Image (cartoon, rainbow, N blue to C red; front, side):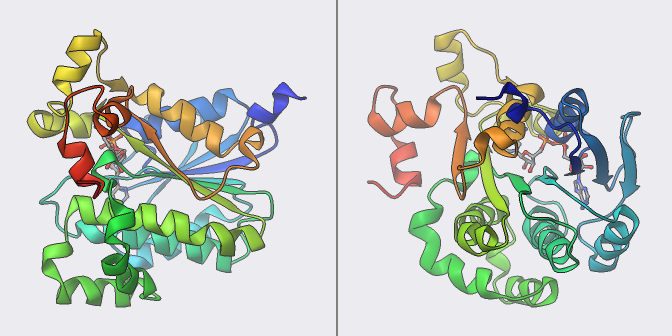
Length: 273
Ligand SMILES: NC(=O)c1ccc[n+]([C@@H]2O[C@H](COP(=O)([O-])OP(=O)(O)OC[C@H]3O[C@@H](n4cnc5c(N)ncnc54)[C@H](O)[C@@H]3O)[C@@H](O)[C@H]2O)c1
């Protein structure tokens, strides 16, 4: 046994979307655990322990330039960027740009065997299994551009929940091909989490499951509450965990699913009703 498996000493971590919220907390935790940290974000970061590279996930050239600046190795790659419904280019910020970054970094040999990728999806992505027949043609698009073309032909899919479902389906689907390269990929599905993005969309985001939390006497998650499991999933301690969707929501989804808490729409989100 080795408690050092939870640490990141000697590892280099890239946190995409690390300037704010969960990505910011993830970058801080990684530094505390011994990692050398690089942040990529469209906004500057107040993190003074990390190297910060400005990059816009909606722009392929910007991603490629940021990767060239970053260089390798990337031993742990955290995909934490996010925007809300209505944000222009949402499909690129939430999925296509992040997918391109992952695949380009691997293609360039920057992600060595033994590395891991941690994705932040959302409980809004629940039910991706049921949507898989519809998601597959989108996932089959081979590039940033062909994915964008697909969305321009299916404009109703330029949504938050579609992008979150796509990233969960991608995580599951890439478990095997990435494992062949010695790379793991896992995703967390946060429930409501107190971040600047959630506060800007407070009624829908922080209002979700508020009755459940009030009944339990617990607040919405903090950014740190999400960073801990995400950082664990990319640590050596999770070396046999691959391709999973890990819900971090104080038990709301499980309780709604089983009926121990009255939230029947959870069953319908998952296609079980
Ligand atoms: N906060 C919640 O309640 C909640 C719940 C479920 C899932 N999520 C997801 O968690 C992730 C983190 O969100 P957060 O709540 O910490 O929000 P946040 O706004 O605090 O952090 C998101 C970061 O992504 C960056 N970003 C946005 N667009 C970008 C782009 N085009 N290129 C590069 N960087 C970009 C932002 O600048 C910001 O630093 C997101 O994927 C979000 O969808 C949030």
